[in-house]
Length: 185
Image (cartoon, rainbow, N blue to C red; front, side):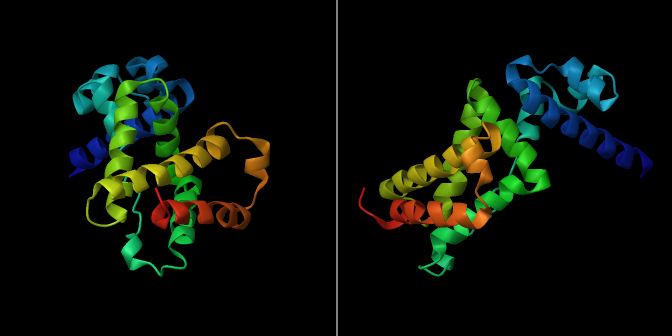
């Protein structure tokens, strides 16, 4: 029991250090040695648990957006609820670090970009209902809005977007997201 608990603590320390290092340095510049040093362990332990830098990165950015299904939401509030949920993910302690790592890294690393595409293609797409070509286009349009806001507010920290309170941001974004959900393509 103590061995399993210690192993879990080591895994968590590695993931915490990896998320911080990937967020600060990006995928390309983050090293296994630096991550191990941050976690206070030998680099061989990182390799033991995650196999490679790619394996560690995949574990560090594993996230379930837990988006509500659009069909389960009141039609007049669905875009608002989706935007509010997404903003809450970015502002939450656990998710925000993972999302920051993923978004920063996706710009310069193809493996990270693929992971981002997979998350948004599957998780945003499935929230819209049964798979169709039109649904995939709508999901991609919603993703452009959500990722654009995340980039400007949480990564680039554009002062005008950062200064908006959540209510103002939701009020501004929800009509666009609603149009992507139901308007003409």
